[in-house]
Amino acid sequence: MGLALAMLPGPAFFVLLQTSIKNGIRSAMAFDIGILVADIIYILVAYLFYAEVQNLAGQKDYLTLAGGIIFAIFGISFFVNIRMKHKKSKPKEEKPKQYKKEGSYWVLFLKGLLLNGFNPFVIFYWLGVITFGSDEVDAEGNQMLWFLTIILITFFSIDALKILGAKSLQRFITPKFLKNLNRFIGVVFIIFGIASIVIGARGLM
Image 1 (spheres, rainbow, N blue to C red):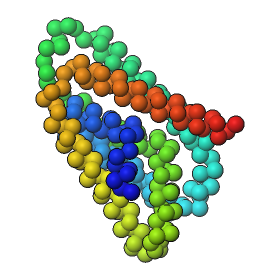
Image 2 (image 1 turned 90 degrees about the horizontal axis):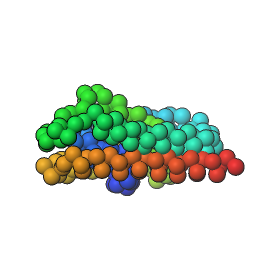
Image 3 (image 1 turned 120 degrees about the vertical axis):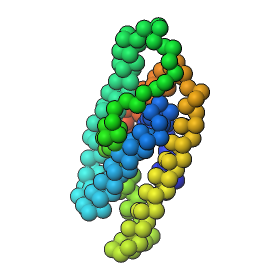
């Protein structure tokens, strides 16, 4: 289950690779820790307030719709940032191949936290994991704790390998590639957002 979570090609997956390529390993790890903390928060909410979260699942269409709108806005913001950078940049400035780290590690941590936190499917994923786990292990004892811990360790370890792999490609990266990567991530966010909006809207009809 941890492996499946790490390999899901959601919006955070592509932003993690982009951060590693553009800003380096430490920046990508800060972003990934933000994602991990968001997962832990959702696990605690789903575990401690299991009955309440199950009731919340009845409102999943509203959450999916709201999450879709937020992700579509994120996607559009990628294209807006590209356009703004293009207007500010001059042809002579495209020469250097050095990529400065954007923002502090705390900013990247918060970016990962909010990005994963705004994804409505994350809470339902962990609710499903805990429901499945409670059928397979002792929900009241240490087995559930180990079950969830191993999932998170697997997820974070695979993400670390993805970060190292993406970092090794940095010497081949050009400004044009980064611009196209940003466009691709923007498209992924918009598609994910529109799909969520459609799913949520259909559920409310």
